[in-house]
Amino acid sequence: MSTEIELKLRIVPKDIDKFLRHPLLQSATGTSQQLYNTYFDTTEHTLLQQGVGLRVRRIGDKRLQTLKTAGSGKSGLHQRQEWELEITGDTPDYTQFPEGALPDWCADKNHLEQIEALFITDFKRITWNLLVDGSDIEVALDQGIVKTETASCPISEIELELKSGSAAQLYQAALSLQKDLPLLIQNKSKAALGYALHQPKPLQFHKAGAVKLTPDMTAEQAGIFIIWHSLGQLQANEDMVLYGEDIEGVHQMRVALRRLRSCLNLYEPLIPKKTYTKYHRELKWMAGVLGVARDWDVFALSLQQMQEAAIQKSSIDFKGLNNLPKQVAEKQALAYIAVREALRSPRYSRMLLSLGKWLTQLRWRRKSAAEVLQRLDAPVIEFASQVLESHYQGIKRENLAQLDSEQLHQLRISIKKLGYGSRFFAKLYPSQLVRPYSKNLSCLQDELGILNDAHVAAYLLNQIGLDKNAPVRHFLTGWYAHQQATHYATLEKAWQTFIEQKIFW
Image (cartoon, rainbow, N blue to C red; front, side, top):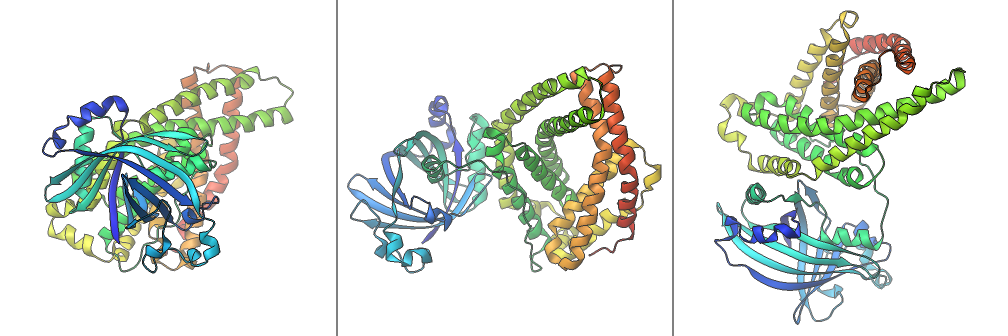
């Protein structure tokens, strides 16, 4: 058994000649072979559900069967356990696998009989073996096809597999290639593409889920874990945003970026200033692109509610209100074009690759003062309690009644950061204390969000070019004023609860 660690990058066919001439490859000689792989599972994808991939590879007269665990893919990096054994036939020989390799489900012979060939991959592979700063890396160019009996899709990708050494060097090699080529991160394996062709499923959006920190972690280990967790959520929602229709995909990608930025903010005193500035700038760029789309999504939903209210409560024909959704839909469409262009841009992939290298390289330790290293190596609960208390005290000093709209907006941002921090570190504290605190904090954040909606709406209406004296503008202003008046009392109550509630750290 071995652990496979690799990066996958998409390359368009027109860039392949340039890739073949890249300086990184000139120190090695490429070798080529044709690979024909048949993937096996039940028609219900039982092995996949068990976290297992099973294939038989044909290389000339040789047959290799491979069993892989599902593993994980983060910033293009794939890690999974792998068993590879030579066999004599074109179908799996289950007796050759060591005990414990196959899932328990396979212990029943009747179950094994349900496994059949589902799809094949047929591609030409050119490989180069490189030595990069002491790390042995195999670079492979794969061109071919994935196909089932009824569908197919092309393969055009670069794989960088770590044979020995540091995963940071995989990222460095990828960044070196991407500096000269518009390569994009590929988070789906060939097997995943095949399964999607065999049995297409509706796209799903993905929420963050719990961050399962443990008390034995250091502050540094926890920070790395949180950033990987947030990157996982970000990339899990890419397909929904690129190809789906549910607006929740954009929302969840935006949440993931907020979590990333919040984590960096919590750890800012322990991160070199130049590094912090770099990643803060890149994350802010992508968050801004997503933020425009999200603002139009929310405004479109609000307009729908307004139309329903106008129909029920007013005999006035708001022609402007009836026409406005079309204008908003056009702005939404343009915003989504911008989001998809950003996700398909080398800049986005470079941001993820650069973050991956940073997290695996741990370079900050070389430049950190002894005091910073001491804080990084301290138990995470000490760090968590300190940063949560610091953010809490900063918020608690505010006088809600004296804040103008911009100050209320800034207060909302501060409360979001405290909320993300609370959820990051929640597993380190008693749940009976964390749960009510987080609930009250979320209520306060929601109430502040409603107050902010009017200012966002005014900005969006200006983007459309709606006249300030238009009747529909007055209607919208009145609608939001009513929302604010209705919720201000609720906000004051939520604020008072926040001030009085017992902290959990």
